[in-house]
Length: 226
Length: 226
Image (cartoon, rainbow over the protein chains, first blue to last red):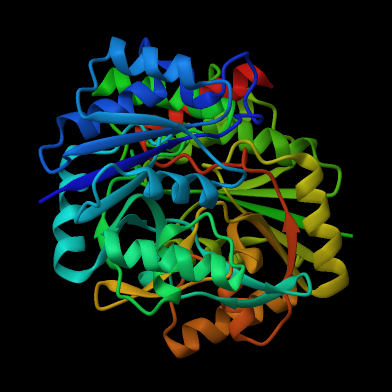
């Protein structure tokens, strides 16, 4: 079975200080994206990795992949305007049409190899799967500045990546989205809109997204404890 | 206007290692609960503070309040079985019936004084108010292990504390909840059930709840940056 991973590292990182975008800053002495790549490299279910970066970061990324010996990397490509455009470019760049494709945000370096595998198996069985964690906060829906209702937390999941799909299903969902002019940062939403089931795989809170400077402090702590 | 704050520090802290429950562990060289008490002490809108602790922590808490000179503290009381029981004991213990009561979890030491004030003003105007932040994650509702739907994130808020209400409204809502056998860790939910409006005050992500050990690393970082 051919399973391609598309690792999206195309963010500008404008919310983080410092000269490097956040996906290329170090945690535990290694760039965030290197951590993510190494997880997919080590995951037996993954047969190919495509890395997506923004303009100007191609050489940096190629050198990073060489340094960390990412043997499954087939190509590094320049992303598009929005995340959806980047993933679509990745889908179109896949060398041979794979059976399954796993989309992962490079800024989630703590993904576990087992969870990647679980999404691949579930995508094979059901068509699509994503990693998510139960919502810890009380969530309320708002209307005109007031609480409209308190949601039933028991059925709520906070979505992470990877989000993994049969290639045909994801590819059709993307074409469908562009056809209808729909943009989303959530791959699963496009697949849901196309009417396909998406399995929820319970993940770990540790699979955090590195978004703001304080996330780096927490990430360093997680690395220490690992 | 009389505005009482009920600071709930009655958790057993079983999820955190170490001998002290998490609300009494230090961040920046000061117990978590001391940070919270000092915010309400410094907030001009607050006229009285009642601190709720669990059995065995009364003397510790009294000494803590003395050390940090919490002049508005009127009493330290032992909480009940559940959080709701603790808050209800706090409500019944208030020396004079106040106009407004603000409920705050001691494990949110980064609450801003301005946000406390904003909830008091909104509670005075509308009956109830709570601090919340826009949900950052994509949230999905689950059914039988699959995604049922992707929620519209634009209207979703993650609830924090303080939650602040006119005393009469909160008191009635609590009595109503006990009458109906309803338990909730969310004061606002009880007020909503009683049919009263609750205003959403946009707060800060920094007003985090200290729940797991890694939260302390993040909290220390937040203190450094303050």
